[in-house]
Image 1 (cartoon, rainbow, N blue to C red):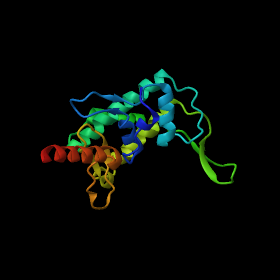
Image 2: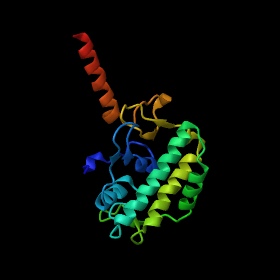
Image 3: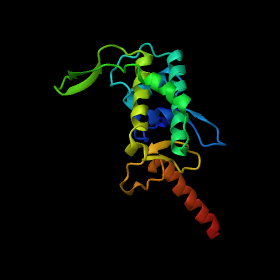
Image 4: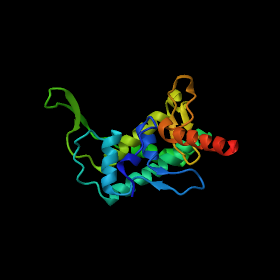
Amino acid sequence: MTGFSDLRFDAGRLCLDLVATGGGRFGHEPVERLDSPDRLRDWLVASGAVPPGTPLPAVDAAWLASVRAVRDLLHRIVHAEVDGRAADPDLERVNALAATAPPALRAVRAEDGTLVRTVGAAPDCGAVVGGIARDAVELLTDPAARGQLRRCEGETCSLVYLDTSRGRRRRWCSSEVCGNRERVARHRRRAVNAR
């Protein structure tokens, strides 16, 4: 079981953040961050897939299986795009999912008078998955955003992220996570070589 702090939101897009909930570098044991319906609820809210306070009583094992299947589909598509390969059958599937209307958003006044996003009713799984798939379609069809896709250089990380850094020289999905691991490993190698 993983902790809430294991949920990653470094990738720069909703669909990429979903892909980051699973996987690992080839040859390493896979990591499953969506290991229960409760974790899925946490991710849906924390990622912005649904506004805070959205009622999600229907999230269950079937939702979890559907979201994981979409995550696997997006993983294949995104990694194929980074590698320059076409994935036409997968693209057809994500297009079909994106055709499903995402949850309808409403602007309402919070207790302090500010406007906040909410949904009119608890969304169904298809609507939530449709919103994530639509984000993937928007990402993959935007040449500027697609050109910013990078694979993390971390030894045990397979995360793909948007490099929006100045100069487009970002090497890691997160400087605090993979970048720090690399700096620690480099320091240890120097310490061993200095002996």
